[in-house]
Amino acid sequence: MKLITLKKRRDFVLSNKHSQKTFCKNFILQEYCNPNISDQGLMFGFTATKRIGNAVKRNRAKRRMRALITGLLKENKILFKEKYSYVLIAKKSILKASFFEMKNQLEVYLSKL
Image (tube, rainbow, N blue to C red; front, side, top):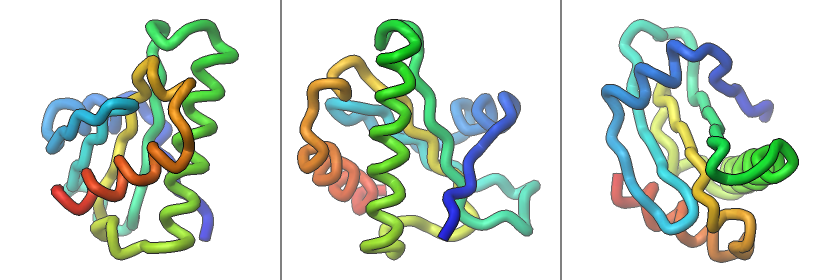
């Protein structure tokens, strides 16, 4: 299954304004149902601000989050709601966190939403 990602700034702004937010140690998770997009299924967005570091560190953070979501989709798609958009915003601690720790955090917080 190919990962469908958010590309437009407008989608990220809508998600930030109207979503349910969960604050984890390594990232912020936003869950948003866009009523205007009916034909799209599950969509994901990944952001890392300049507070994370230079471009290399920001890209590494986004790659780690993308790999995390891809792994969870292969294992357990039930955690995600259909027709929803999920945005993950990296925090600085994501660069040093273990993949196992991040996966456990995401599973716990997805079950809470």
